[in-house]
Image (cartoon, rainbow, N blue to C red; front, side, top):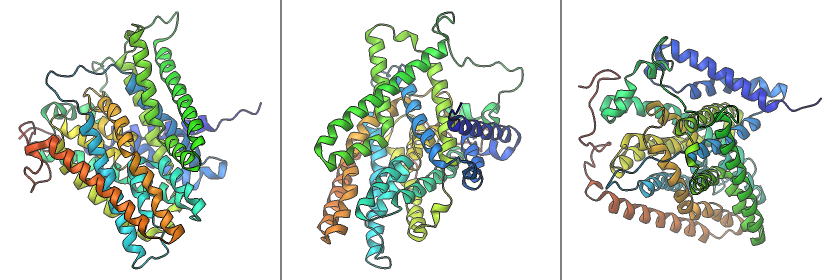
Length: 484
């Protein structure tokens, strides 16, 4: 029988890479010292094989892209199905500040990308297409799926290879997220940016090696909410996740059907929405939890089990996303690509730390770390970094991000829509379209600035000469050792 084995072959290879990465972290001090997540190591282990060896036997990075795409949605659903922690009395909702933090970096990258591109067009690279710079925020803040789908759509304007360039930006973003994120964690430890509660976890031996010692007391990873004679508890939770994912597919199919009536513009928006599948996935996860709560059977959902499912999804998608990086694609437009990637990397690193340390009042380092991760890679790499400090997602940061993602998407729609506007200048020769794009970007700057001041008030420009806004919760520590 001629059954397809590709998905299981790829998952098997990624699994072997994860096992090898786990062994490396358990045995070598380098990986322990820098708290490098096993999934990141596994991705880089698999990367050269998927570039040089596996394509010869019919395995491609496109297949890994599909794995990344779907497991990202599954991880979001698992988080959305969890019962959220009760909000502390008097504590403000972090939904809008979180959205503002993400939107600030997306806007910064768009401004840098478009500005540098116009500069290059009018100086040394007149052949560069005007939307080249928008591949920076698409690759960094939106991920490989969005960067490829939008860039590939520019073929109708005669621009070839933009989708692959978008993948390269995404790949460089992943590299920045991996090494920049690990540096941020260790720098935060040295500088005392991490609270006492977060530091207590990171000083544990098993956190550094990634493996719990033999004969040690093992924590409970999940609770059974069903009788195995009827249905295994894990099967029940997987069914809830996959059922919600099917609902998200139905929703996107319905939206696509309706948008097609709006003509080419509607179809283009529909294509972009499929690239943001994870947002619709989490909405269906939240809807499923609401249905269960309405039926008074939400007690069958175990948060710890959903955390295990989310953790599995994150490990697989991070490994596959990094392994899918195309080395050959870097040769295309390599000069402006590396220039813009370097500028974006430095700006995003410092801007995220400065902005978020003042924007939030609780779990500041965890929120900064997650926003940095999603502003350079995808949510998958952001969650991988977050798990280095909060492996069980005990803090509300990951769950609250799922609520903020929907608002972020709504706020980012105008920004996504103007990405194609400069192409009209290329098509018609009229630079007015550049001015329209600049006006929209300026409107975003004003909105973000005003919102930031209203939220932070006295913290808005406080301690502006330092990168991290210091509060009484920060702890001065010596490496991974003791408080000083």
